[in-house]
Amino acid sequence: MKMDTMKNKGTSRPVIVHNPYLCGMKEDILYHFNLGTATHDLPALFGDVKFVCVGGSAWRMKEFVEFMAAELGMQNPRSDYPNICAGTDRYAMYKVGPVLSVSHGIGIPSISTMLHELIKLLHHAQCTDVTVLRIGTSGGIGLEPGTVVVTKQSVDATFMPKFEQLILGETVVRNTDLDYSLAEELLLCSEELGQFHTVIGNTMCTLDFYEGQGRLDGAFCMYTEKDKQKYLIKAREAGVCNIEMESTVFAAMCKLSGLRAAVVCATLVDRLKGDQLISSHDVLHSYQQRPQILVGYYIKKQLNALGALQK
Image 1 (spheres, one colour):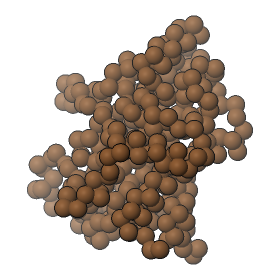
Image 2: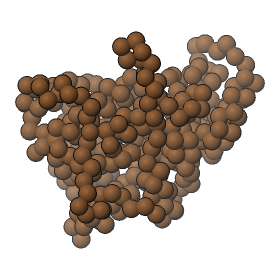
Image 3: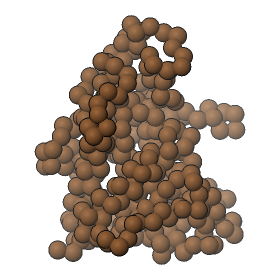
């Protein structure tokens, strides 16, 4: 098993930005975070960050930071872990020790905007050796609901491992490779936990929740159930285990920035058997907590190996 590069003494992974214009700016305003390089001491506030966990829901990311505080023994009963981005209603951000928890909303445009500012934040804060983990929910293909999928490779709706973006009217294609050794480490952590089933597989990222995922329950549906089943089976044959809406751009941007990254999602439904979520609220919530439990265990294990936690 390849060890996390955090553990390799003498090496350091800075957060890379590819923008020469940032150096000439008097202040870089991270508008959607309500932070800025002139108004906040970013190295003092965030320089110790080693793990960033991102997820769609602001409420879920607050729940995660509270969970991590308890796991790391940093829990303060008098603190409600205030939202660092309270001055904006776009995203929410929470921090405990070296762990940053950030919401990203739903879909590629929302997470892309957040990631631009997150990457700049980590760069301005002079963070090194940062691991970023997306935790969330997804639709499974041929998996029992509640299964956790650690993404091997993110693919688009044609099952190709790429992220396409229009920049200045031109199509730019970027690689969506994730750190496979990190995926293996997370799978090992799940085996050590022994609480739920976890697999490594490809994750398909789509542009919307309904037609883009072949659902039959949207406002529009101009295909048949037979068409849907054919498409999902073809996806399964291409190694796709689950479907969500953020992983391609997440993988592409993390790779460009030199960030070690993983996507960990619980499946809430087997899309081969239906489209709507029929499990109870309590059951769905228990599924949603599984990526948090796995990632929390991984982070605690890494910090213990570094001697970063008090015994």
